[in-house]
Image (cartoon, rainbow, N blue to C red):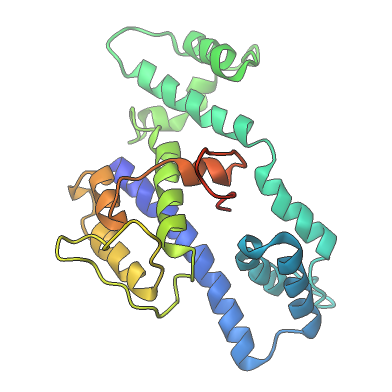
Length: 249
């Protein structure tokens, strides 16, 4: 149930981000209230960074402006912010791996001294010794706060949600009105992208409605119409995957 909840949370965050982007874009285009300087900067950024960067750009230009003048975020700073998404992804993701393995070790029958186990994992996985005189396990509330032995769900859920987001939601956006229906067996007709507003309804039916009553991987497979993979996750971190197209993010 914890793992399923993590999937719901992570997917909701991604879907909400895209919804806000589309909503702000559509709202400003209808009302004509978006300053010309912001539109121009967004369009130029899209041409410079490619189609994949267009979705987050518009809400940033709408929301991240100086309150006194209304001027949009500078183009060079915006480019740096986008590039920062791929800053040290390896280091960033090794930390939750350590926490997940520590969580598993302490919930096994074999006795483990928390501080020593944490120090061992830091050296083995991160290559950096744990800070002397500290006791990270004593401040890791998830060890005994309803996530017992399930801390791996954070990173594992991100793999699944990145796959579902880039396979179905990203292409035309959550608010697109294109038709898309499930087959008789309950799954999309193929694993090829089929973005639409109906996809969001299918997401509700296949993922949100069952909640924690079904196996998480089975729900994702039903929604995608094929087995989930980690390709989109790896691509989103700036890694190359054999046989895959350029980065998904």
